[in-house]
Image (tube, rainbow, N blue to C red; front, top):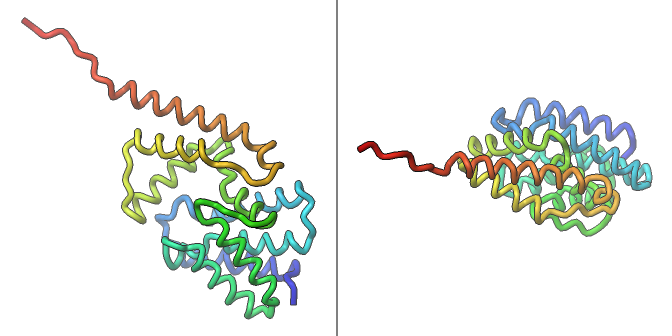
Length: 213
């Protein structure tokens, strides 16, 4: 059996419920909202790039499942996600070929992203589309909070802005459409980060005062 609209709807319901019950609250960036956002971004990119309906359904399923692995583990969460997705799809009698494509798309989102085909490129671009959006700084702060709470990675303001600046400078969208539509937003956010870093640098500069006689 191939993935149809009914399966996509069942996946959406299953993952939404699963995340609400199983995902720890301190995953404030990799939350249900992030998953919903990636699903919507995949839908948009599929329409923009002329992906077939069958391929779009496969990608929507992969998008729903792409971060579900955080309910089991943080390191290699993508692999854990493929196991959950595969089991669900097997139970729905989905054929092995489409399950393999879903799994490959999920695995492709691992950083650094190395997608091997257009479907994987779509999910990878959708997963990181937030770096081009106007609310990027809010998402960045949520990720910083999440890392502090879940993996004990704590950064100073300077360290955090430098880390994000380096990431945005080296990141490249994979689809030509994404480059044309979202590189400008990413550049704007890079400028915001550089300004934030400058503010922190200026505020930490000690200006010597007059020494009383």
